Length: 362
Image 1 (tube, helix red, strand yellow):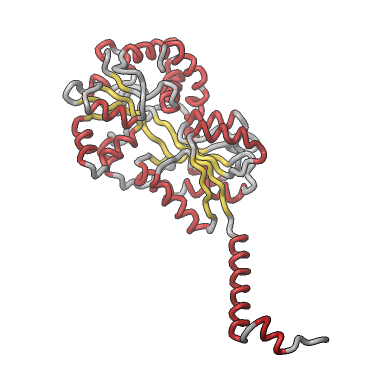
Image 2: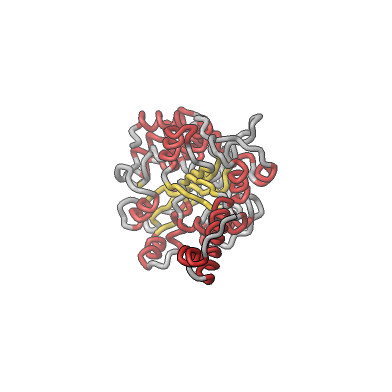
């Protein structure tokens, strides 16, 4: 075997100390490469634009070592992207914030049904899709109530204690609400359609349109602020927007809530409408086991507590202890919940949109 002369070796490698350093560096880089290759990455398409969810993702990564790579968009944008990407989609998990969108994603074949005893035991049937031979397509992990906010100086709670009263002639020119085609309103009316039938629901919609104080615009918080500003007397809002204002440190937010009363409608009849935020495994996920593990994590007590304490939502898993004083102060104890499944209300939204168009609910 030939040998490299020592003088040449010295010029190539430098001193023994440098040689050892080079070897250590090479070993370190190799180790880091192996570690990076070994770490699983889960691609999440999320419509949950809540900063408090960062704690959810961090907790999951700490517990499992699986890193979350997140893409944010609204529900419709996520479903459109999945359709466009097709089998080339990198998505592993989908999180959406409305029952109608979850039902649409399932109907379009964008989700991969899974079988998970943990999820089936933890999530009540009314908060998940009906299983088929492949498994269950989606699961709801948190709920939010569709409540009525009102001007305490102009109205009493009894004036707006049902959704049906929103169509009463006494409220003409009083109501502020976001677009009729927004998923939150489509799901609300989808549940009413399930309970009351098409004729009664369409008549109710005509009454609501007649009672609008202005054309629908903005989000739920805009409607609440409009009531406080005297632009209207009644607003329809998801409960967590009100809870955010209640928990805010800003004086102007507290001033808004001082003027507002909140009603959980239909407590003596059908119960308050509840929508869901839920998740599914993407149809073309290459990471089925990790994706299932993430959904199972979202049903854990710690994750369910994040939903409640971080974003003012109610857990779908029963028995989770809540530490959110705003939810406790706003909601009646053990308030009555509407008994229409998320799947049923979501399936009705196509018919609801047609009714919205007919009555001019923009």
